[in-house]
View 1 (cartoon, rainbow, N blue to C red):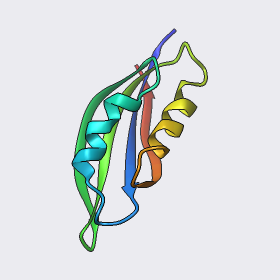
View 2 (cartoon, rainbow, N blue to C red; view 1 turned 120 degrees about the vertical axis):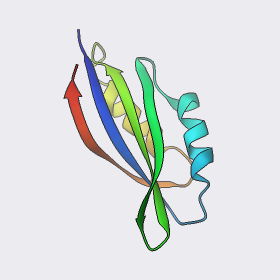
View 3 (cartoon, one colour; view 1 turned 135 degrees about the horizontal axis):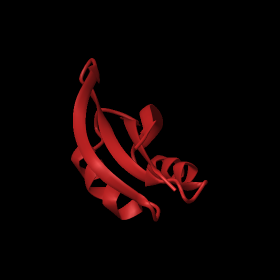
View 4 (tube, rainbow, N blue to C red; view 1 turned 90 degrees about the horizontal axis):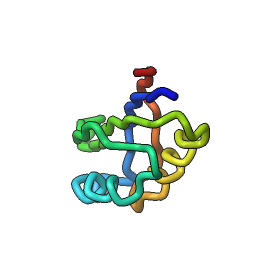
Length: 89
């Protein structure tokens, strides 16, 4: 089996969300077979910021991507997520 590298944007509900706290929670909520490669906080518009996170996903579990997205949406303060890039290693 291979691995997939994916980048996600995590959009907060408001400008009041602690994005450093969101980043800190990522390692706690990841499903088995998923590892964080990088995180950053980037501007969107009008003072709104987003978290950009990169992951390596073991594709031996066909549901790993869905589990990752469900876990990301479960983070308090995150309204939407978007997979902005993915490729096979």
